[in-house]
Amino acid sequence: MTSSSPLHTVRGPVAVGDLGTVLMHEHVFVLSEEFRRSMPETWDEEERVADAVTRLKALAATGVTTIVDPTVIGLGRDVRRVALINEQVDLHIIAATGIYTLADVPDFFRYHGPGTMLGGPEGMTELFVRELTEGIAGTGIRASFLKCAIEDELTPGVERVMRAVAQAHLRTGAPITVHTNAAARTGLTAQEVLRSEGVDLGAVVIGHSGDTADLDYLHQLIDNGSYVGMDRFGLDVLLPADQRVATVAALAQEGLADRMVLSHDASCHIDWFPPGVREEIAPDWHHTHLHDQVLPALRWSGVTEEEITTMLVDNPRRYFTPPGA
Image 1 (cartoon, one colour):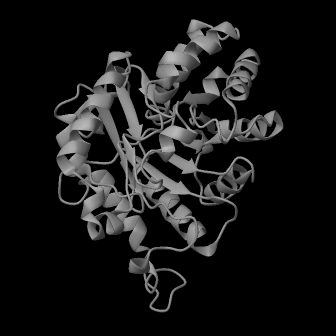
Image 2 (cartoon, rainbow, N blue to C red; image 1 turned 60 degrees about the horizontal axis):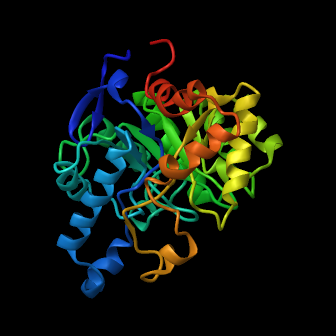
Image 3 (tube, helix red, strand yellow; image 1 turned 45 degrees about the vertical axis):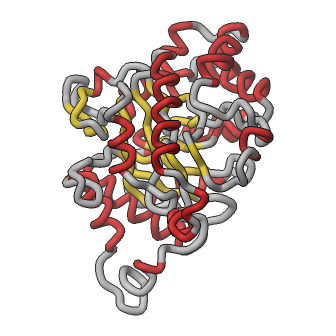
């Protein structure tokens, strides 16, 4: 794949070189789907879709042209709904395949696959490959990257998903993003597992690395070859904004802007919190915060326009372009 080769998005193929300014970890919706269906009074489809359109139009107005959406199975992914919204917003949305679990594999895969009671091939890998090469849930909308997660520890279920993601990467070349816990330094664990499967860590973003100001940890991740996701701007409850900015600025001053990607991990709507709580505890956790407040703060801290372009344009383009292309 070259910069002119097509990358699959919710709206269809786009040349990698045309992605423009990219936020590398944003959600449209994060939903507990079974609960949503069980409690219809908590969901107004028309209202939520309209709100998402409004929020994403505001994001597009900042100059952002692409969001990378790592909403996968376990986070309420519905690409049909996202496609409906995307019809009304001039924004590239890149969908993911994978499974979000912090403990066990979904029961659907519990009894069959490697190491299970029934054995057999890894069905998760086959699913991921199909969603990358044919489309998600019969929509024809193809995923363009893989997502897995690890929080405090590498459970057997988490490891199995991670290895299935690695195998799908090896078969398709699709890059990987990993949800990690920076305080527990589990990005290093993820790198170890993926590398043991033969993954080139240059094709991996270690997500949520920006939740720490531990430069030693971040240097280890970068030295191992991965991008670090400074991707939770607005979540000051996990790390204050000034420390997030100072950490990015420090790494940029070391010449490491080419190893960082920026984002918020925000959602148009997430149902993990009671109504109003998200806005109360994290008022800046929304899709335009980076351009409204973070980029000016980075500039004030000495980060150059060239370095900002590297993090928002060049690194995402390189991430979606396989090595050697």
